[in-house]
Length: 206
Image (cartoon, rainbow, N blue to C red; front, side):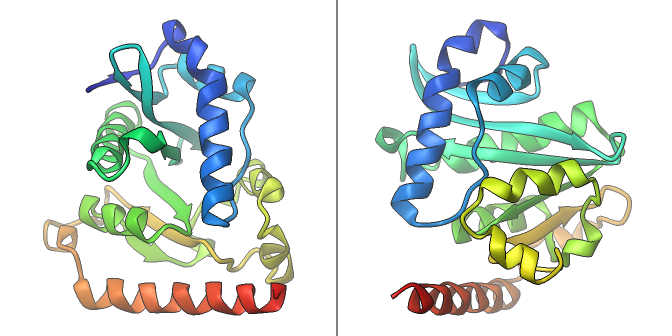
């Protein structure tokens, strides 16, 4: 398996990246902001992405989004092709995109929003902490990207204060070595809250 910083030579994978992201969201029944091949190619062109390849076969992907004049960056679109799941690849991709973000934007706060408990755990291990949405970027273009998510109505009803996603943030200024340890109790509490929210939303649909 080869994990590399993406470039224009990887344009041919743009469509399968988009398809894999969409299929994953459908299978899990969770919301996710849709991306177009054009949007993905821009990330490849700028070197703001990590792609995992097994020879010439696409295996996984994640990209960087820049907000608020480089004050914030987000590691988004984390995806692993179904044939390569349950092998720890997502964790490796996350670690690589995190390091790339630190290298290219050393002063930026790194954040993400996700409904996936495995991603939350990976973020904890990298040093992220759960935060309210008010601590994330207020760039309207970022939140505009949520409009294609199936849970956008929740975000709208709460006036952009909360959703089924959890906001997580890594602040290079305030981060200490002690904070990098995974807080097991906090993670279990967060897991319980998210599972309750999903069950309530599912009950409303049935």
